[in-house]
Image 1 (tube, one colour):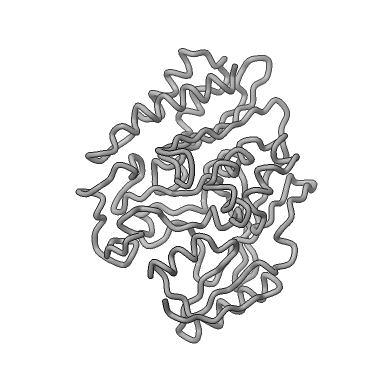
Image 2: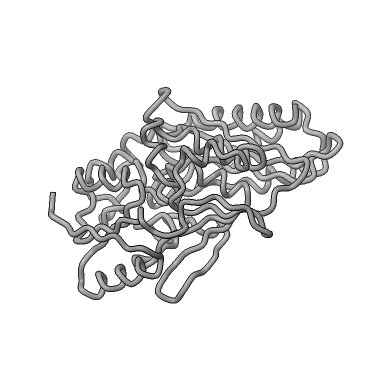
Length: 327
């Protein structure tokens, strides 16, 4: 392991200045919130930063605060706190449930929401240091290799899946992300934060090397909204989703007035299903309609040789999730 310098900025402006300085010196920097993902990547020689910027002392980023435009969640809020916060549990249930499914209690106690959103892929070829697209190489080894857990939507040239549990929930909630950078702060919808490999193969989001995700903004909670996050894993703990569904439905007098459906672990980004949402709006969600929605959810899937099982799994999970919420 290469030696590195650890720095502890006190505010977001100092973080950006430090990142800019490191880049100007021709060095590399990595950000550490909870640090669980970064530590593993350093130990596995996937990154070798000259400087680790420790974010734990940043002012004001450990809070969940209601305000006139909704709720602000600091990027350093832990997944455990997010999963148990009364406001999130009662009004943004899908997010609380998503945060509560991440990894293990020990990791949730230190892992942060910003870190969960921005974590790197867990493709075994990437994590084992193969010279793939994510490492600056010229191929995706999963195309003809072991692709059981890889993308059935949005793949190519890389077929990784996005590993975050909170990201699909935040996209379903129409959250916005506040980003600090050298030109000040900007706010982008969650739906515009993630990047497909065909757009930029070496990264998974729009963050530049001198930018940091500092805050998540949730819109005001609406009446008659039900939401949930459902996750399927290949074992009960210490693993990522094989498939997940984040669903937010606004149901008034038995009729669906608005719907947001986002899949996790099936694409290189959280996979939004607007064509399925259009089927639901203005309708009573019956078992038949939920079945139609499940089939529509996978109508555009393009599986690889060994992950075709995700198609019936996704169809069934979308159907079951809708029936459960409408029930």
